[in-house]
Each structure stands twice: as C-alpha cells, then as structure tokens.
Image (cartoon, rainbow, N blue to C red; front, side, top):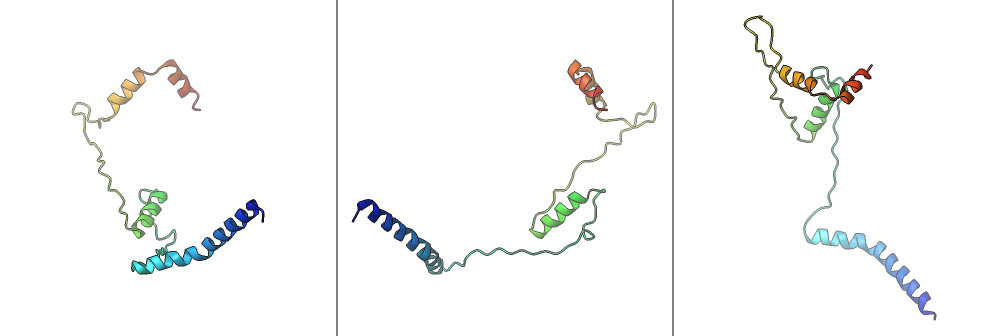
Length: 119
C-alpha cells in the first residue's frame, strides 16, 4: 500500500472520529464536573409606546429600557445649569463665553474659511 494513501486514510478516520466523539466527550466532562451546558435565552417584551422619550430623545430611552432588562442602570447626569446673573444688567451670564471668545480669537484662516463653507 502506498504510504501517502495510508496517511490520508488515517487522517480522514481521525477527523471523522473527532467529529463523532467530541460532543460526547464534552458532555461527559460537564457531567463529571456537575455543570450544565450554558444556555442563554432572555426574552423581553416592550413596544415603542413603553419607551417614554427622555427630553425628546427616543434613542436614549430605548437604550435605558433595554439595558434595564439586562440589569444595567443608566448613568445619572450630574450636569447642572449655571444660573448666574450679571447684577449690573440683569442678564444671565453665559459660562462658556470666555471659552467661545478665546476659540474665536485663536482661529486660523483655515478654520474661518471652513466656517464660511458650512452653508
């Protein structure tokens, strides 16, 4: 018998045996360890009417609802509005005004031309 043919037959037999016996071997190991195969099936039912929009944002509401089904809690926002008022004029103070003014003062010509092309 040709050696190459013999090796090929052995390889095919080994592959076939592994395919047939591997699931049984794994089940035997799980049984001997008193563990059950992992089965995941989580079902939840809700419709778009169940998801109340949060500040008009339906996507965040759906994400929070789906996350809650799996035990995740949505992070609570700690952002607060700054209600500072200029006493001399009585107008609200924009807390980002200094940042905006600094960014505008340091814009490059390329930045300015990019803003002009936004229309």
